[in-house]
Amino acid sequence: MIRVVVLVSGGGTNLQALLDSKAAGKFPQAEIVMVLSNRKKAYALERAKAAGIPAVYLPTVRYDSNEAYGMALRDLLLENKVDLIVLAGFLVVLDKCVIEAFPNRIINIHPSLIPSFCGDGFYGLKVHEEALRRGVKVTGATVHFVDSGTDTGPIILQKAVDILPDDTPESLQLRVMQQAEWKLLPEAVRLFSEGRLKVEGRICQIQGE
Picture 1 (cartoon, rainbow, N blue to C red):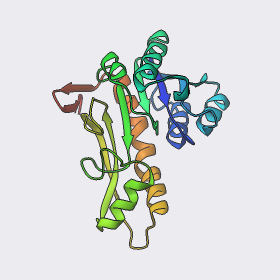
Picture 2 (picture 1 turned 90 degrees about the vertical axis):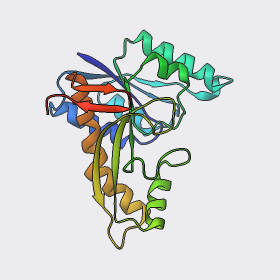
Picture 3 (picture 1 turned 45 degrees about the vertical axis):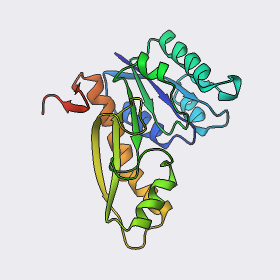
């Protein structure tokens, strides 16, 4: 059984998609063993508790540097024998010590079709605001492995979502979540748990397709 931890800073809608998918038997070879947040009042922690999953609060303010926080996070993950780390709206830049400890075992969900609207400063509503400002007709979401860059790791899955003429950043954000993010993330966990993701250089291939 693949042991999964989900890191999240906010409400946890992507976490809920994972919890619902697990309950529906969509990734039977993986188990969510912990949900961790850097914010004490993150509703994601309440979602975890309701599902009977350990909810851990690890605040950044307890540490004097991002490196120190990263070392504490890395040690906690190693102690819990985590196989896969899922970033589901975790607004903390992972220190290199975490990334190096879990090569090709950290995945992130980003609300655009990478390489569009990604990188430093692109998160949350800012991604959708820029997509609308640029007048693009199609956006979407991407699940990718995490490397030392920002949104630069090997792409696992992508799904396109049409932009409608009357879209606002908020309406677009919701539709991207509903049509793409909540589908892609559980599927990526399933593929990982089945050992079907093979990374060669900067390319991720799905085996058995």
